[in-house]
Structures are given as C-alpha cells and as structure tokens.
Amino acid sequence: MLFHEQPSEPWVNFDFLLLEAYQMLQEETCNECGNPIWICRNENAHNVGFKIKITKCFAKAELEQWQDKQSKKESKKNTFGEIPYAVAYTYDDSPMPTRDSYYRSLSDKVE
Image (cartoon, rainbow, N blue to C red; front, side, top):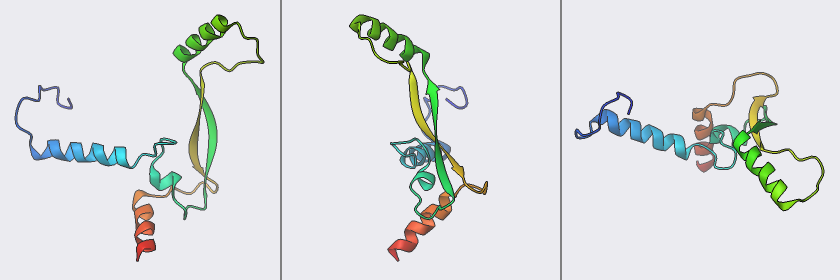
C-alpha cells in the first residue's frame, strides 16, 4: 500500500515493523476520546486540561433532519450533526506529556 505495489511477495522485516507500529498506535489510542493514552489517562500531567469542541458531519445532519421530519416531533432548537469531542491543551503552554514519561510513571508505580 505504501509503495503502490501488489503485496504478493513474502513479507520482509519492514512489513512486520509497519504492522507492529500500527498495532501500537491502535492500542495506545483511547477508545473513549481518541487521544493518546499518555495524555488523557496521565495522572501526573497536572498541567493538561481538555476543551470540548464540536465538529459537524453534514451527512449525519441530513439524515437527522429527515428523521426529524418523519417523526414530526416539535422540539427546541436542534443541533443536527454536531459531535462533541475533546482536544487536549496545557494550562501553561508547556509541551504535552510524552509517551515515554507516561509509561515511565506507570513503571514507577509498579516498583
């Protein structure tokens, strides 16, 4: 996929490294918020906060509008297609915690 070649040859070491990197990325992404776990689950990152932002899916908005017309419910102002999500920031504009510092703190807890 990366080299625009048909993957018909036996796997080489680089293929396994890419697969391992992808697996690590999946495992280290929070299922709840989509942020790296060393940011959103780091108990020692006292300078990290989260802002709630909104993104909009126009396809979902169209579907919800159609469903709303179908149900003929009258309600207050609807916010069709809006999906809340969290974006990390630091209170003091310092760099975000690193993956290494997060895992080091977990290791220190065990010892």
